[in-house]
Length: 388
Ligand SMILES: [Zn+2]
Image (cartoon, rainbow, N blue to C red):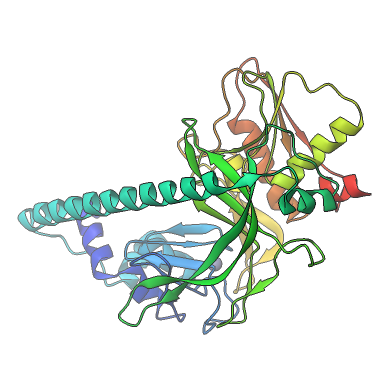
C-alpha cells in the first residue's frame, strides 16, 4: 500500500510538463503555468508547433482528442501501456515522507491554491464587467448587419432574443511573451453579432461573439492569424459560459423548452415553427452555447470505445459516454420545464454527438418531465434543412 503523501511526493517530483516533454514538444499556453502541444498518447506528429490538443499544468493534463486526462501517473499508464504500480515504478517509485515535511507541504499547497483561486475569481469578474460594457454598447439587432447575416441563412430572431450588433469588436489572440507567460494581441477589429450569456443564477455571465463579413460567402469573417497563418474561428466566447445559456425565445415560466447547441440551429427550428404557423405560447428556446455545456461531463470511468477513431498507436480512442456526472457543470434547466426538447446537430462526429445527447437527456431528466431528442436528416443540420 502506497500512502497518499508518498504519491503526492512522487507527483511533485515529476511535474506533468517535464514528463510529457520527453515525448513531445510543448509550448506555453494562454493561461499562466499551462503548456500546450501535441499529445504524447495520440498525436501523429510529436514535434508539431501548432498542435494544441494536449494541455497540461504541473499536476494535471487533458487531451481533447483522447478525451482523457489526469495526473502524471495516469499519463505514464496511458502512454506506456502500464498498470498503476508499474507507472509508479517507471516514475522512480514512491518514497515514504516525514509527517512534519508532509504537513508543511500540505499547508503551503493550500495557501498557494487559495491565492490562485482568488486571482482567478478576480480575473473572471473583471472580464465579466468588460463584457457587460461591450454588450451594453451594442445596438438593436433590427435593421443591423447582424440581422442581415441571419437573414442570409433564412433566419429571423424572435423580438425577445438576447442578440445585438456591435460595429467594432476587437479580436485577440494569445502570444508567448519574451520573459515567459503570454499576452493578448489584437489581430482584427470589426462588426459582430453579440449574444448575451446568462449564468445559472440568472446573472449576465459573458458574450458569444460572431464576427461578420457580409461580403464573405457565409457572411462570417474569414480570418487568418497574420503571424502563424492559422485559420481563426469566426466565433468566440468571452466571459463564462459554464452552466449558462443564450435566451432566444423568452417565455418566463414556459413549460416547454427547446434547447440546442448553436444559435443558428435553434433559430432554424424557430423559423420552421413560425413558417408552419405553430403557436409559440408556452415555449422558450435557448442555445446552450456548446455541446459540452448542453450535456455536461461524463461520470468517471464511463468512457466508450469509438467505432472508427484511432490514436497514435492504432488503439481505439475512448470518448465520453452517456452516463452524466451530476457534480459537473452544464446548463441549468428550470424546474418548471416539463417538456424538454433537445436539438441534435448532425454536422460533427455523429457517434460522439449521439452519446453527448443521450448524456444530456439523462442529466436533465426529472420525475414529471418529458425529455426528447430531435435530430435533423442524416448528414445535415437544421439550418441546411430550413434553407432547402
Ligand atoms: Zn491524445
